[in-house]
Length: 406
Image 1 (cartoon, rainbow, N blue to C red):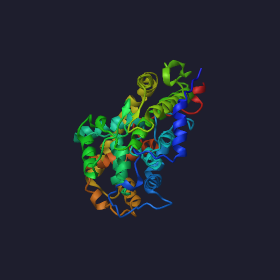
Image 2: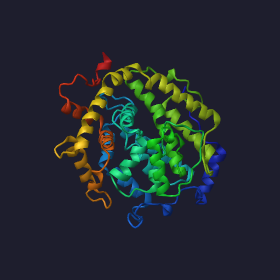
Image 3: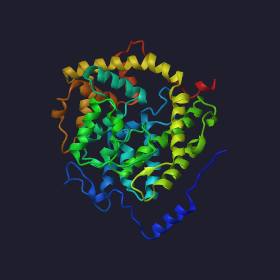
Image 4: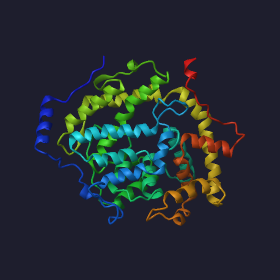
């Protein structure tokens, strides 16, 4: 039997009274304190406030379109009823803004971080991320992480003068690392931010040390987990991988998508209203951690998913990486990486005040290959692979709408 929790009557009355008195959260990030690389550009006005500008910049990036064909969890299915990364970021944004509104935080900043947080993600989800990192590290000693690459997309590959606060939230989101309490850590400026980015490339565990500098980004970080925890279960049922969520323990947060979203939202608000941090009760946090582990056991560790990845996708990534690396080292204008990546960047930054294609051409070849491969959608990757290796034995078999019904 589903169970939906409510805010305590005392807190509800307090919130209503605060709204009548036009209370403002002193811990919310103020638009006036926004920091950009070019402070004389992208100034806020009445109809386009500070972080609304970041939201719109992200929405209009060509990379944003590619969310629509990037795997969230299930790669090998042709099924429009399961989540792709585009829906995930929208769901994160919606849940985070719900919490942020009640807490009196900056909803525009929350939206910007939410919509941009996975923009640098690879095709084929975390499997693709792991493979690309292994290839990159094997040749350069540097690590690839999708959160780090997301800020590279927003700040370097598409130079749109995105704010420091949005970039920091994207960098620090890492939804795989749950915490019971989130306290923002001050960020002095772009120099410190750049040091954090570089540290993530050279230190394997550096991303686990990242802490957002605003409460808004802390909200988005926990909502990244809330958004996928129950939705991945819902998708598994739709694909016939699970019969019901009764497999899961449930506990205080529940086991269904709707219960998880509602109950964690309520508990976070109950423990965080008017405070300089976000917090969950111990029992809610412990249940959240257990729920994530169960998702790994029953969903992410599925032998059916692993087999296709291990037997086909891994070798395909390695072969494509090697081919594109040779092209990047030579940079002939008729090469695939030049015509379909470098030309794309040049066109994408046609009106940029800071981007230089000549500077980009000096990029280390492995980094250039990573930039290109991470930008691909699932179908783009498969089509390019067939273009490069038309007679290769490796391929991906997609499960159609009706195959599970047999």
